[in-house]
Image (cartoon, rainbow, N blue to C red; front, top):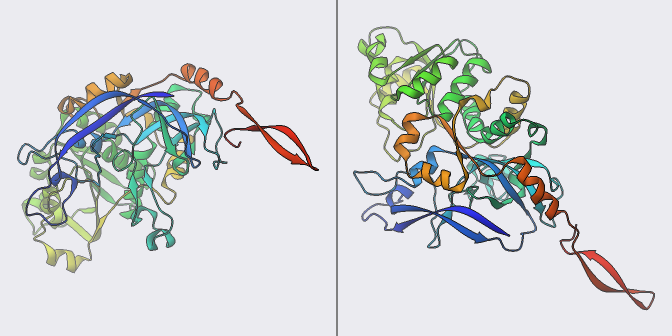
Length: 416
C-alpha cells in the first residue's frame, strides 16, 4: 500500500564545543518534502491506519524552522533525523485498516487517537509507573516515524479508541486535540492547581489555552490570567480566562512586580511559551507554597535571582513532560461529559498533504494567525472504501497432518 507522507531532512552538523547537545545544536538547514512511500509488511504489534486529521504542534514547526542567531533548528526536544528523513507529526485521529497478528484490543474499522510517547515498560522509571520519564522513551514523529501521512503504521499500544466520537466532524477534530490537552492536563496536576488558586499562564498556544480551560473549569482556580504577545491568540483566549494581557502590559500592571514590598498575588505559574525570562520577572510575586510548572522547550537557560524568596516561601519549580499515566483517558472523559471543549480551539484546517506541507513552510503565518491548526487527510467516506478492502479475507492453503492423512486447510495469512 502506498502513502503520501511529509518528510523532514536536515544537515547533521553538531555544534562544536558543546557537551550534551540538544537537537537545536545538531541539525541545520531543515527542508520539507511530500513523498510517496510504499508500506511494508505490518509489524505484529502495530496497526495500519488511514489518517483523518493530523494536528500541527509547535514542536513540528520548531523542527522545520531555524534560529536566526545560530542557524540551527529551533526544536530542542529529542529528535533523530536519519539520512532518508523523518515522517513527523504526533497528533491525530485515524481509522484502523489492519492490525498486526499480536494485536487484540482494536479491530479494523475502529477510529483511534494516539499517545505520542513510546515507552519501554522495562526501565526503572517504567517499573515504578513513571512512564513519562521512561529512560528509553522514543517520541512519535520525532524519533520514530509519525502521523503526517495518508496511511501510516503506529504501535498499537499508543491507541485510544474513539469510535463513539466519529459520528460528527467536531468529534473527530476533538479527538485530534486530545494529545496537547492531555499535556496541559498533566501540567495542571503537576502544579497541584486547586480551588481558590490564582493562576498565571504564559503563552496562549494550544497547550497554554487548554491549561487555562482546565484550571478554570475543571481544577477550580479562582482566577486565570493569560499573558500572550500575539493579538490573535489573546483574542481567542478571552473566552476562557478572567484576564488577558500582552507581555509588557502585564508586567506594567502587576503591582508586586513594580514594588517588591507589596503583597504577592500568584499561586500557580504555568510556563507554556518558552520565554523563560518571564519566570524570573514574575517570581517575586509568587505566594507562599506556590508552584511553577515548566512545559515549553526552547533550549534557553532559566535564570533565577530570587532564590531566597523561593526558599523562604517553599516555592516548587517542576518540569512537566508528557501525557501518560491516565491523562488521555481523563481528557476524553471530560470531553464526553461536555466539560472540555477540545475542538473549539481549532482555527484552521488545511487540505491534504500538500496543504499541510504549505503550513510547515509558513511558520510565522501559522503562529500569528492561529491557535490549533489541523490537516484533513481523509474523509470518513474515503476510509469506508479502504476498510472494506482491508477486510477481504486472504487465505493461504497449507498442508496439515490429520491422523496420518495430509489435508488442505485454509488459514488466514495474517494470523487473525
